Image (cartoon, rainbow over all chains, first blue to last red; front, top):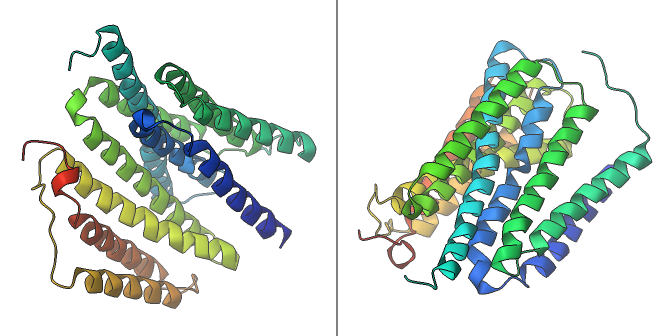
Length: 99
Length: 219
């Protein structure tokens, strides 16, 4: 029960913290913010990793490996794409916003 | 598989809080474009530390598969992300998100099948949620990715009584989940796969309605 209470507490605190953090981001950065927070949602990768901490039969091993590949793709890809999005700001600023 | 050495729980909790703080600081950098660029990598570092912590706290069977799968996914992710055209970025974000959905329902179904007899009610509920939301996320994001890439018509599709269709799907999915509550039956796997399939339909029907003004492109 204590475990559940702690989890619910963390869940509720995350709402508050998330709201505080996100409400202060200027509209200019909303799109890269969305991309970066999507990258954070790839925390699923921790679940995929934990699948391998116990015994798995061959079929489950394949499924777990798929989970890990897709989670890694999501995690790394999203941070990389957020970086690309943010680089666009720099080039615009450097070129004096030609578009 | 040798269990890793025990560390004091207080130290572990402190480390966890530190990782969370790093993540929050990373998100908090999104005030100016230059700070945001650094903030993005700070957040990435926090997640990588979390991965390292999970790996070091739990003995991992099959380290070769774990490393192989992670590196494969990461490589494909970084190569594709840096090579696509700028105009394809929104579509790629949707694709990556869909992959995250796949990871979610895969993790859920493996845990529910393997630990069928020992899962607590809370774990079962979160397992079913993982199946449903993961599968719906996958199909919905895939449709969004296709629409954003202009591979599928961008105009929204509305079915007659669209909301009723969605409600019916959700009801069926919830009912099926309740039926599958006992995970140790011979038809459990079939039932879980059916929940995944229905949830994919739900995601697709849900995402059908997007389009029009929110889709950039010349379609």
